[in-house]
Image (cartoon, rainbow, N blue to C red; front, side, top):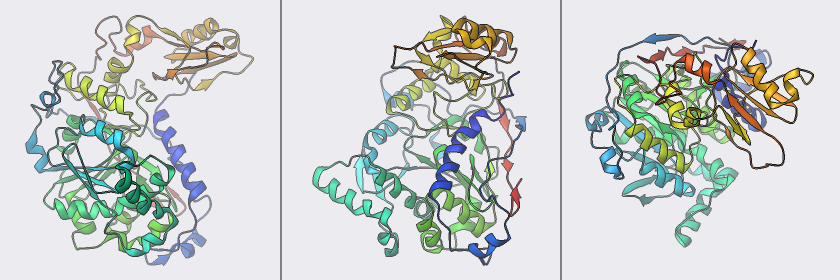
Length: 474
């Protein structure tokens, strides 16, 4: 029996981020709740870093109306895909794109696809420039001079010089290190430029937002209340923060409390930012310190996973998607075109709808050779299923929770969820992946027809608040 997949997609990104935090953070000598952190640490039982606790999704059914429905017609004209965009919503929902000059191809893809309809888009970068008629604001230019002394900040001047000399900047690890310094100033500047917005949505250049679902979600909350939405990551000292790679949403009420009094976050939390590896973490810590507001975790609707890696289970079947992460240029463009021209529906786009986009091969075949579908649960080496791909497939058939399997080099893996995965370049060794089409069909996917999902309504997830306690988080 395979374990239920209640949180299988949730933890893959979390493990990566927590590992980064563990391997790169150094002790913070800052103030938290009027005490220095190193003094507070004496009172905290180890370990300080903790994985997210096990959870079961708490859901509700809310009847929402389409706000940016598909056009349901194919077109080569990008402007046609925006013809029914609800521009009035941009008076309430301010979209902010955080990027960098080294991400030129990603920027072009984003601006010509999923953010192409947003006429008042704010773009914050590390070099001032114009791209596709959009003004890119150098968000680092106004930082206090002390930031320039940090080793990770040296890329700022280097990139500017390279851009002035050549007109382009190659991607590098230094650019990623520089990126963290953008989080705090972009919050200040976003509020200064759009003080009347009800919601502030912060995206990154490889994040794909499902705009219709985003608008539907925000319609369900009062922006005058203090809300901090995103996908939770376990940070330092028992605190949680919203992962920037899944998108971050702040309400007007929270922004007013956080920076409405003129507080310069980059000055107030300079020590935290200079010592921490991750800007999204420091933003979360600053929100907690300044406002007392805890993150409202809306994973799995806010997803930090790759499109190809997202596991779709019975539990997630009708859950709406708000965002995906690590999108390639081609994926940004193709997903946008599919989303805008798919069949119109009154309900929101849900997890199982992704199967129509990414796994149309299921209409014709249940097996792919030289393909890894990322099945996760490795069977013992002495299990009969490890003898051949057919034996592995038979094992999946016998296991009532198995939706897919993979086999290579006498290793059989089963999974209770559907992923897509990727092709295997090395064809000298067998690598076979298969899906149980019958069970996937029983979940509600028309695999023999148009690949539509049976969901009649979206099953929205309730926010999970991880309350921070120094002997653990609950």
